[in-house]
Length: 165
Image (cartoon, rainbow, N blue to C red):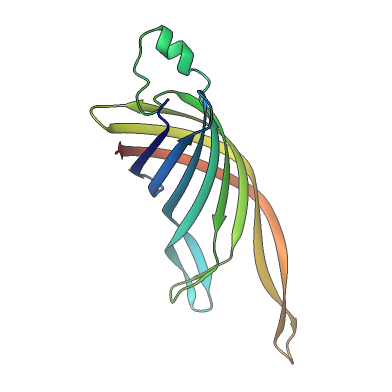
């Protein structure tokens, strides 16, 4: 496993720039900034919006040694992994929609494979829990609001093609 790799990925859901740092021979820490999209609501209606997403993801590449023994390609962490995706989406107030801030914790299973010099594809899926921080009116006369937390199922899905520098 390389000490550190940088890359970009584009896929069905994210457009991402990431950096993976080796912690041990089979554990890496992935830091990622991505541009995701979703459906947002505002006073004037609802629409699709793009929003920044910040991820920290410890990854355990559990079959690296097996792939090395079978003389398979392991360049740039080409292997299967288990991860814990920790995601933060900041609050955004856009003309088209408002996005409430949220954090989520999603256990994820994934795989990365190389498809040429520097190019790779990655598939990952996970289901976890998300906390969404919302505001609601307390008093209509004073226009005071309070923040409350709404918990829901959070899904991580990655279908991406990338390039590693």
